Image 1 (cartoon, rainbow over the protein chains, first blue to last red):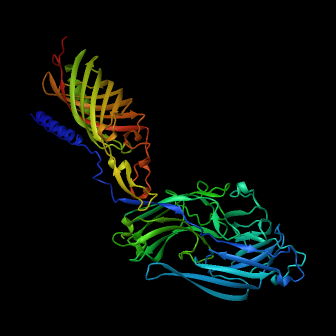
Image 2: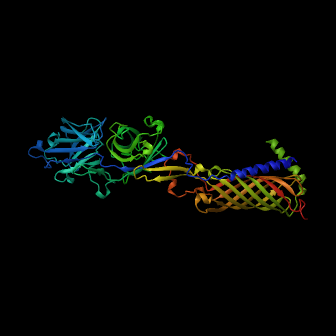
Length: 377
Length: 235
């Protein structure tokens, strides 16, 4: 009898188990798994990288009046530096001799914009001048610099030395006889039209790479990230793209197809907060860019070394993919309810290491506009 | 350990002394009910199983048989995350993404042939069995939008015991390990191979264990054993 009781109990248990196993767990769209996500594309922005042009003197070597052999460098899209100084150098075409220009007359034009009562933008330029300086540190998205100097200000520039290259470097300490490693802006007379040459942004080296292979310089060849026209309109020589998705407290940016940063630069990510009228109200630093999941290796040193060979290529010099994952748990300014309330934009920036990290510079490469479902207005 | 050995020895002695009740060339039929628990990497929940065994005793020690098991269980939903996108990320407003855990019920038909060795007793007969078979997994048509099946080989091993209730009937308890060969977890994913699997939040969803090409299932069943013609058989 005990065996029969055991049998009955066992049979009933097995039947119950089978019945429960037959309960279906089909998914329906009415039961999303966790928070909803809101995604938007990272799109390349208009001209934002360092850019400009150089007016060379008419004579390659010194004219009868070297003080009149003016060199005019027009720059915009520069970072404000905290640990370095923009320094101007002259060189011959093969860059075997550098001479520093030491008396710079700089006219800075800052353009501020406001919205009038009719809703139209009003632009207000403010011009300041400094003379006789050896370098400068200021920058910003709304500033243009006209740097005027001449070959006569360059101590050591012999009358017979050719002036075929103008280079703007970032020097972290007292400049030496030649520019340091951050040789990020330059123009060549050989590429000038009527002595006017567009600035190239990248890493200067004496030789010019093949135009068809500009992203893959060999040793000794210049590495160009962006070129400017003779009117100073710059454009990146590659088209990155990506996607931002916000899901609850988590923001993910996955993007690809970047040129590696020039020496002395790195990629970072910012979120931009809007006020109640939709105007910019502040920025939040989302950190240095990393490789995608699961490695999340910092790409801060990708300008000089290769921290992640699976994602950073040496030939061509590109970053195959980048990623960022942040949570508002560690970002107090965005830890609202709902999270990321009032944040309207996410920007991938290229920024000088000599600038203040965490303060957004002007060099936005990609931008994503967060949907209203995230920003809340 | 010594106590366990003594118990086993006592059982062996007692059953051997009563072994005369299992006869040669005897058929038996066992209907079974129970559960099947796949290993974690198989991404299946514990399910139910209904089985039908037919045995033929070659002699009182050895037998052969066939087994048909019908199993039904649900996939582990959390292992099959996909996303449904609404809208266009490339235009203003972007897109909205619903994350879904794509669970579905799976029916599995398992057919095997086995050999067994038993320690026959008057009331109690423990046995060991091993065999080879074939399993057919059938996914849910409603979730997948089509009929999908997977047919592969299996290996079976197990042990059990049957209790005699009368000359014709008995109760059988057994535990079997069914190893499914060429197992594919991707087969269980209704969104396999589709862009909906791209999940940009891998850190925020628990990752299943690494997939394997075999799945070990542990099956416990309670059976009703029937011997046509009685224990003594027809001879």
